[in-house]
Image (tube, helix red, strand yellow):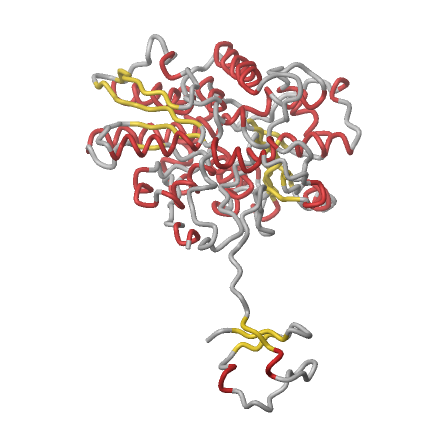
Length: 473
């Protein structure tokens, strides 16, 4: 049954129009039946820009600022390889989005931007019954300074913590603790899969944009994903359980906030529900500027204890290959009872988007791959389809890893490659100077397992995945 529209007033009749009597008239303007015509089913137009659904939790679009340059669409199609891998006419949403935010970095006018939540958080901070607990991701400390005119890759950990205290944080923790916790669980999972020779390769799961991408485009592969939550979600879970109990604070009075390089984390927390707010670095910088916080006048401040300490392995989560490298450090210990003499895996540090390598762990030689940029995730599965075998794979949605996340500062003076190189060097320098190199030697992690996780189990640290391919139509 076709719909018919009145050519005079636009009223649409949705029913058996041809069965209506000739005397029938439009109920709106009362013109005769012969002034109606069939409604033409107009195909959805393909625009030069990326459309964004209003309920997107991570990014938003201001049409008034769009100059229709097409940068966002090019990034989504050719770098992230999302746009163009579905039929827009069949899709159940305006545009399939994995929330990576790379389109926002490419937008020259701010038409595409982070969906800001700091104003809602700030209003909530007026409630003095609440305890506001912040955590900062590894990449945030090598990026925030750029928003205030400092050189790319400037390490500003102490100033970052100080700024959060000025904004109202009651406690500030380092997410490298959550990264170490992730490594403990993921290394254990890797060792178990290797021993059982099942569900290989193990594929990392700490990047929410990558996880969503897999659920939409490769749902038949989600059984290969690690069941581990990301560092912010693991740490968020521990804040509202272990730490809350230790401090005598009701978990419903805790407001958990993560400072990240990533826009997709805003979508992640709606899934895991372990963190209440995610504030990416560009959003944090805007908040600081609105509150007239002078970055250059900030004093250095230390993280709060208990969930303060993170290993060098936790810090390098910020670069592509870092998750795998850290997991291999601890997996080797789990297999042999000994630490690697040289804990650097130089062959995993190329950051060229798709790196394959052979690595020695215990008495095993593993075939591994480090993938960043979703265009390379397609290549990964093409290789696997051709019969390529891997034991362990790391995937990050953003080229170069979290340090190049969609919530990081926009680069104005250097090439993207140069900025990635400077941030990468800064993160690896933090690993070099770290006293603790291995997650399993983090004393607070050891304490957490001895006093809590070994007794209660680690179910709070794991998650499941779902086939989302239905949105493609």
